[in-house]
Amino acid sequence: KIYSSRIHYLIAATNYETGLIDYFSNKNHDDIFEAMRASMAMPLLYNKIITIGGKKYCDSYASSSVEPGMLKAIELGANKLIVIDNCNHNGFGDLFFYLWLLARTRKFRSNYPGSGRINLKIPKNVQVILIKPKNKLKISRLNNDKEILRETIECGFNETLQNKNLMTWLWSINADKNR
Image (tube, rainbow, N blue to C red):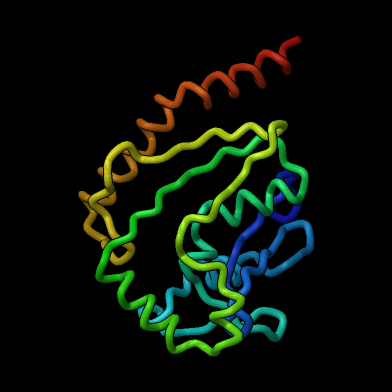
């Protein structure tokens, strides 16, 4: 169903050799399931590099942050973006990531977009609906505590329902369909 969907589904992963973000798409018949594995292959923790099309990939702060994905969507012609920003950095994980980054090649480091927020300028014709937790999430990347997972899901569900911009946009789509 992913491959036949009308939705252009993109998955970002960091090229392990170059440090650049590569995007995999259901429209290009990329291996979406391997791309999902690559996008979650956290260096040091997962300790595996995912090979797709002869190239090696992993997860990184750059490939998992919202700004590069927004830029890619705009580049591809999107003019309405629903952005879910659930970034939840912690000092301990950040330290290990930066140590890993220092161990990468000079080529990787010079190409790597960085983990800091980039200065993203949204064109006037692009509407962005941002869904972001109002409070810092209790969960971390390695947490599998069922209660914390449940609280996190409930938080996301409730904040999505309370997002007035999203609800207005969804109602306008529904109204257009009924005309």
